[in-house]
Length: 265
Image (cartoon, rainbow, N blue to C red; front, side, top):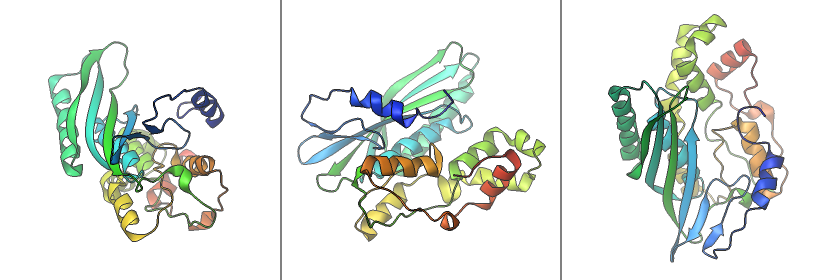
């Protein structure tokens, strides 16, 4: 299989076999849903785990963002993080300290507490790996599920595409982009997309919930817009009508895709 998410048919087959006997598990593993919901009384505990397997320059920062995003689109407030860092042999103390600073800064920015985890130098790794397990809370009745989309809903994309893909390419493969004919200024602008407009959707989700009756939200940072829309449609058992001309493709994304033969979606 190719790198990336499992084929949706295989994932559905695997998750259909998972038995959830604990009645407190309100939402267990399902295709397209961003996190689990566990009944803890007057509210739900929202639980998520997500890894960073490619980006290396700000891996500690990334792992906080991607996990917080998945809680935010469930209507939850991200609150606690456990992080596992697997580092290649030869990693020096400065690199470890830099990654921990990234973790701490990202958690502070989003009001998240780092409560534990695990760090080790391990064999046969070509690059660092980071895995986050994040917990948050949402009041009962205020949770938002990907499966909540209904006929007649509007599809709202809060930012242009492809922010994460472009910023990672610019930061991890700048030389390849230059060889493909992409100018240094475009690469530098793409690298800054990580922060402006940024890959975090925590603020976006909060604004959406305050401004409208939101039926469903989903974070498409891994897999791109096409995969995100497919997951939303599959989870909600609805069809989607998408006007391709109205999708705001960032100029840096258009340039990268033309140079590398990629599909922005």
